[in-house]
Amino acid sequence: MKKENYLDFVPRHSKVMPWQENEAGHVEIKRENLGVFNKIAQAIAKKPRFSYIELDDFGSFVWEQIDGKKTIYQIGQAVHEEFGEKAEPLYERLSKYITTLHENRFVVYQNKIT
Image 1 (cartoon, rainbow, N blue to C red):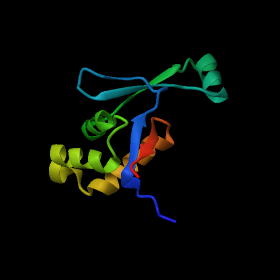
Image 2 (image 1 turned 180 degrees about the vertical axis):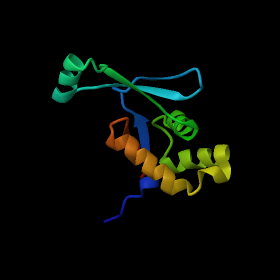
Image 3 (image 1 turned 60 degrees about the horizontal axis):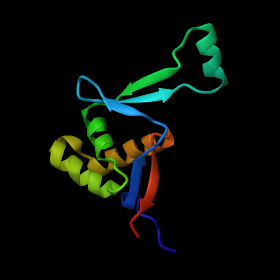
């Protein structure tokens, strides 16, 4: 059995996460606060229905590279070209970041190169 290489995965944005670029040039993701506890907090404590998550320079660049066509390895190459040594340790950092996006349902893995 061949072991899968995470760098061959192709992430794409989740369809349920609308986003836009804000005035600062950073990606801002709109996330609906769902679930029973959020509904209670919205009713009692007047908590907002939506949260807006602003990504930093690195996160915004990576987010804009995620297009459902590029592998994580290819995204890493673009990050290296843009940020150079500032992105090191590149693939450790990038893998952790994309894994976090996936765990929070901001991205899904569309397919992978075979």
